Image (cartoon, rainbow, N blue to C red; front, side, top):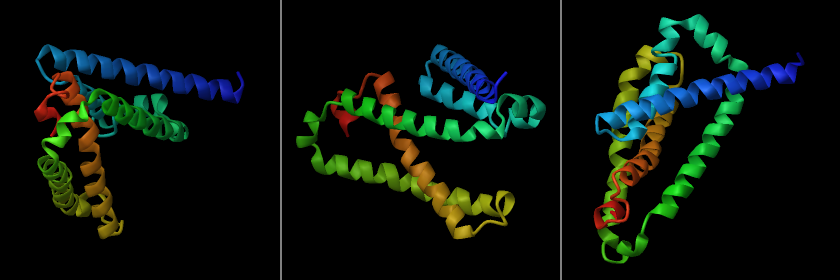
Length: 171
């Protein structure tokens, strides 16, 4: 088998495992009345290095070899862009005229609170997981990552709960 075909098969195997786990997580959490996106996130945590990587490191290194990471980084960025686009097409922004100042306050707090929590978590985590890395850079990356990822997740949850077209959802 050629090198490219082998690489492509590994990527397809990874996609099958990731999509199957995400759909199972979404279905399971949906059965308990929780947003499906939370089940998808839980599936990702289970497949990642924190859980499956510790329980079955050989399986993880076989299914998720490091040479395919660049492909999934690119796919994840594309997926995030598509998710944000879909959220934009689903929301009814006509309510913004009535609640402009309030929505700016809510949006600011929706970023500021996760950012502050990200700083606190990063300061606590730094000595334990990244002591050899520059502290301020580590703290900034964690805080920004937590604050910007909250927005699309909240958008997905509002769409699932069908409140995205309401006054509350627009806030």
